[in-house]
Image (cartoon, rainbow, N blue to C red):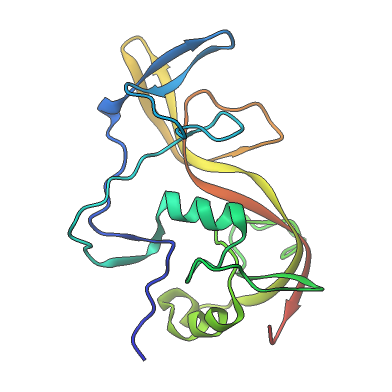
Length: 202
């Protein structure tokens, strides 16, 4: 069976936002990161600025360890399967996710764990467990999640300087429950898994 090409996976030829495309926008709430050529949809409903991804006509090769920001956001927002982008599987116990322990996982794991991995349909949950280079060699669990709560965004944090913005942190988490970082360039949508059950069979 040929390897799946996950819908959310990035390609080696994808290019993110160059720093030269960014500027400072002054608002009633203070300065914030912005694009020099603003477009509709640059910001989400919480005011976070999202990275733009330029895709090449050359598809390059699939990067299984990297998520395409736009496609990840779409699947996570609408609870679509990360492989086929169709509605993820859901039964009375909740949506189907794959998750594993991380160094920063809460002691209640899998309850209240944070994930950037969208859910799956049943068919592709089984195939992913067999084919994904990372899942094949590590411990992972299928979960049913009753309340996959939208938690916030993860991205690159910029700090304002006298000449513009400079990168200070990559992979910074910005929860919706806290004040938004004015220098955040979001690239992943994050959900918190609540009401979780570990299952052997979807």
